[in-house]
Length: 206
Image (cartoon, rainbow, N blue to C red):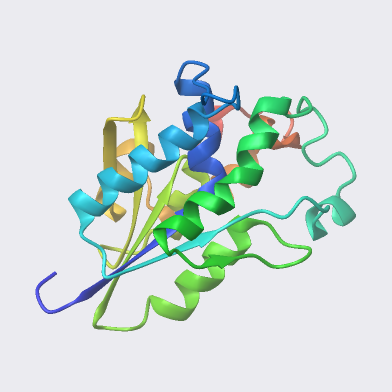
């Protein structure tokens, strides 16, 4: 990407959530839980060294319900209440981002996913900018656009990462990123309690 600047957009909650479940129950000298925060910092350090971004911004979720909850009352209805240790670290996450000097973006009534999608739509047409979404959530792959918009995500643990462009998405799913919303709509998304077409599973949806 010679001559281009690189923007990295952090899907911050998704990264911290993955780190929280991947790491032991670390704690500070005061007994505060820190495993997820440690993982977030490790991921930040790794992506700065590997991707060498010119700009980094962070998208975060707000605690209030979103327009998705208004449309579908059962949205995320099967999820267990977040553990106190995770909630505490989600609050402290802002301190980490502030310490790194990373600006934080959110929008009332919307998820971080929506904020990220908006940023991508507003920047992907800039010819001198390379956009990378750093996330722990594979839903971000639907935003991949050729080699101009890519997704940097955790494959296993915190050290095994992969950078998805359109070809890599096609290799994983058998179709390009532009068809991922259709695939999700047909198959459904159990993690968000969204039903798909009755009787059609992963193979049928593919």
